[in-house]
Amino acid sequence: MTILSRNNVRVSGHGQQPMVFAHGFGCDQVMWRFVSPAFEPDYQVVLFDYVGAGHSDLDAYDPQRYATLDGYARDVVDICEALDLRDVILVGHSVSSMIGLLAARTMSERISQLVMICPSPRYINDPPDYYGGFEQADIEGLLDMIERNQTGWTSQLAGMVASNPDRPELADELDASFCAMDPLVARRFAAATFLADNRSDLVDVSQPVLILQCTQDIVAPLAVGAYTHRHLSNSTLVQLDAFGHCPQLSHPKETIALMRDYLARSR
Image (tube, rainbow, N blue to C red):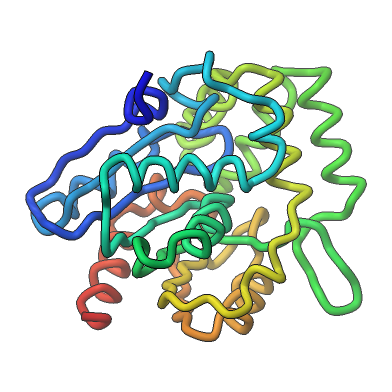
């Protein structure tokens, strides 16, 4: 089994510079279908599924490796090394913003820029100086629900993440994606995601970073984007008009336009 088959890696595009898209918790590479094709004329586009997600090889899943975000960052590192990618623009959604950050710290010689869509270095509040959006009890309740009630947690979390009540198809798609995950894998990935604290990893990041923050996002509130921007010394914070936690699904044109504008200016 190769790394490329393990992670269901798909490479497309006509450009030289690689752009790697990393999906968030409970999702897979299909979530980029409205955004990634826009960059194929100018970049080498790389899509993949984390082990345990999408069409990855579930037999390769190691509970110890994927108990923390470092294991998922290792997937990103493995893919970049297997394809010998250089000068990579790593686009991470949600928890993959921090996974990408960990990967970039590991191999700064390969990853040159980061695009973080709705990032959060810490989902749990840590008063008085940090507001992440959730109390410890909220996260413990979610993890307990994942363990005991597969249907209940997927619909509840999907509605929270989508946050576009006038477009129920978004929540339905996320619900179906969450349901597709093996329950044990989902529980471990959720724990690795929502219990992580990556605030200290924001220090001394050499790569320039674009932070795309939605106007109203229950999962990663505005205060989280401001905190991340404040602690990433070489970052640019841009607020989208989009609502919810998945602008690549709900507002792909705006997401594409802001990414293109930033990348054009950064050249």
